Amino acid sequence: MRDTGKPVSAAGPALPVQAVQRKHRNGTRCMWASCVALAVSLVAVAASSRPAWSHLVAYLMWNHLLIIGLLVAAGMSLKRLPRRAAGPVVPQPRELLVPWVLALGVLAAVAFVAPWDPSPWNMGITPEGQPVTSRQARTSDDGQRFYETINHGEEREVTQAEYLRSEQVEWRMFARAWVAFSFVALVMWRFVTLRWRAELVAPAELTSPASIATHSPVAQAPAGWKVTLAVAGLWAVGIGSSLPGLASPLPPMMCSDLVGADLPWFVLLLPPVMFIGMAFFIKQGPFEAPWLAALVDERVGAGSYENFMLRLKPMLLMSAGALAQAVVLAVQCSHERDGAALPMSVGFMLSGSVAFALAYCVLRWRRVSGV
Image (cartoon, rainbow, N blue to C red; front, side):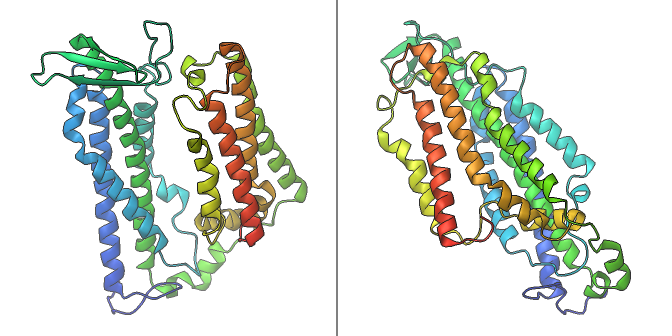
């Protein structure tokens, strides 16, 4: 393409070709930096799989800062992408999730789930028979003696093997989180790169009769009964998915902490306060997704995504789902603790349910779009 130095953006504030090329190059570099972060995260997962190796993760902590920087920069870059007024939706899912990205996603999922690893919900039992909810370990100044604190109790001396095992749990959590967030950063930067690459296409190519004829949405909006059926199905799944938990054993640590015992009451008030505060400041619905909406409308019909989300009311669905989960946990914990005080896990679910419902009411009162 001949570089004329003129704006090529399809809509919104126009940018010179050189600026678009620079943003595309920067996006590509950050995408490959995300691949490096993912590779380091996989190495950390491998190291944390053995107690004797887990301390090596400490030397990879720079990866933590790299991933945070990539995610923050990707979020800012996504907000600054120009709007497209013509041509197909970019990127298409098949462009975004090419085989090599899917392969890395499968690898990341296996490393994150780690079926060969003990469950993080089962940290063992104390000598007194109580479930372990927290462990802190340290060494003496000379590195010859090892100590551990369980459930914020008294410190006790342990063997080197026990110390390494306690350290392994902490490093394993870091490594798994790195894998998940580095892959998210990779997908976000690939999205940014594909969008800026599309901006290098001449506007004439996007608005040509052939392009418009090929990519114009011709699908009709789905019938109302189909939308109603889909909404009802999602609500049934969102609420009913908690019910099978009544027949399954509950990890003991889920019922271990009582409200007001280890955590103050204000922690339970934090979700409603935060959600309501955000609801007073955000300018659009939290589930508005212009790219996803454009893809759906292109295939299903104009306005289909917005209509579906307005009828689904995802914030109320999440509130109802959290309430159902709180009821299930309360029933299970009442059997575990013989009707003792409310466990913290139940309190958090109730707090989250109230937070979603109140935030929805505030957004409706403000008449925010997409709610």
